Length: 210
Image (tube, rainbow, N blue to C red):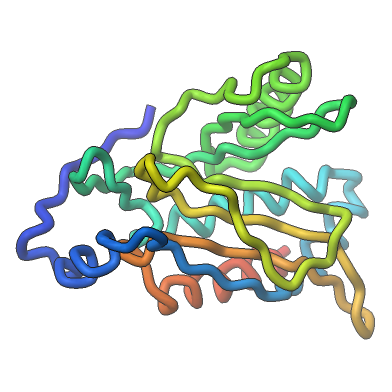
């Protein structure tokens, strides 16, 4: 179970940013970039591993190295989690989907085993929201049919939401190298373009460090 620590907003280094952006009707900002994944894709194919689970694990490992992505706003208060897990959409055979909850493990084997169990559980259910409903998650989705250049998300503006959202598109090859389009959305009261840059730089390094 992840633990959280309350952060006093007054005196916090982002106090003014928090007050400014948290008052917006739409406080999220987003970017999309093509991220090279040649190393990881090649290795996964050679070892007959799930490329999907490999890159999801890489995404979550990177997220857990960036402090700005571990803050959440809950009932107006600010909290910092010691671990961020993943709520990923899971496609069913009838082309509907459900939301999963997969705890993050640094160990790839542990993570993959937990992910496989959760994916099977959600596929066997009929519920849209079978996750644990916690805020210490990344909202994650794969759209493997589309080499997208941007993504927007449906959100209920009447309900507070500060969970980052990451989407991955169709794998494609360009001049002998493999790439994934990756969309990143985060609450601007908690993170900026600098943190998005950290995410993309570290993710590309992780996807090629085999």
